[in-house]
Length: 233
Image 1 (spheres, helix red, strand yellow):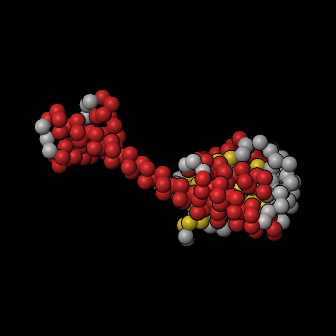
Image 2 (cartoon, helix red, strand yellow):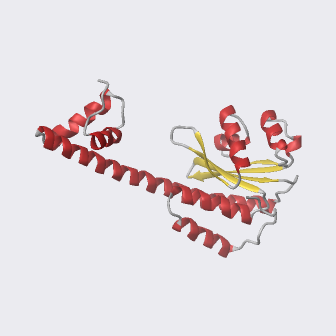
Image 3 (cartoon, one colour):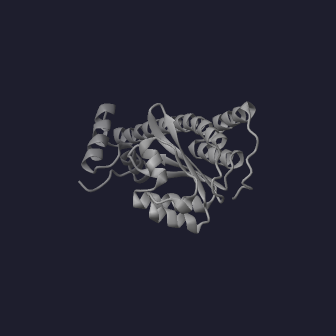
């Protein structure tokens, strides 16, 4: 999807509506998707995307408005270099007014130029002092982003940071609750089959988790699905 490269007027009401939309988003994926769609229509851009830092230190694609952005992100992730990674690592805004004059990332520059992209703006998304992602804006015109555009991008990035951090926390909590339920079910199977008490059943699951280098929830899931503990040790 490509915008008309014509930004819509923004006021406090627009950001209030965005805040509500992000609050009402159904899960993490919908939250990030709402961010890029709002950016696409609110900013002077052709494409938008969000790249996210993971807890393991890797970079993943959160959402994009066009496959072009996904390809640009993927190339930088594979090369471990590029402006979006610079914004992630340094926590500073990276604005490239004219891609054709950029010399810092030659492989990225040639790939982006081939897509006829001329201006790029990467704005870090921060939760406290931690960079959790980058909001990326792309246009087909040089010198396309004004100071006002950059200011709006920073406001949007702040809204997005709060929403994404909250969605991640809720997702993590939901997984934790799900894991506890799975472990409880697996313990029940062991207690019934081998006449164990709760502590003994949990000790069995934990031992198999350690011996097979498998997450406890995955050991529990396999036991529930197959009625067998993981093999290998």
